[in-house]
Length: 65
Length: 130
Image (cartoon, rainbow over all chains, first blue to last red):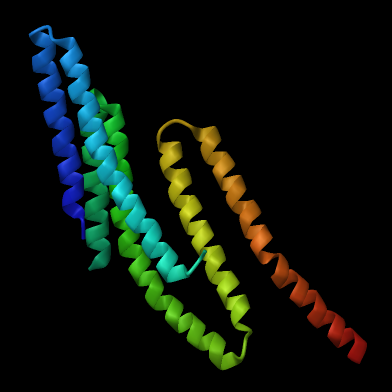
């Protein structure tokens, strides 16, 4: 199953946090916000894809709509 | 055996969410949703198997197939509403989760209306016989 997705998302979160800290320390705050936004978008696309899978399989099994 | 894996996933998800909550709250939301989905995908497969048996029994006892489909739909509605409400409540919007649960109840009631009507027709049929 997609158990590794959880680890990937956690890894992305940690990496984004570290990069933002570094960027903030070298007073490039604008780039830090862009990086955190990019991390968020990547994670959201993965999660939306999984939600699509879940709803697809539920629809297939319960032949709802 | 399945249960051990599911409990493991739940613990890992909670840990990851806790880890990310400090620095990146929005990412911890994504980890929670991903963990919930992985668990639900496990459970959906098991439920599919039990539904085959359920419809087999219904076919043998001659129950009308549409009634069985309505029961399955109601289970699915409860399933999805529980999934959504749990995640929404997890992030503070208790009121939105309550609205979702209310909507789920209304949908279930709307789905079960034809069943009630057919029940009344059945009873009416008996009364006329008596």
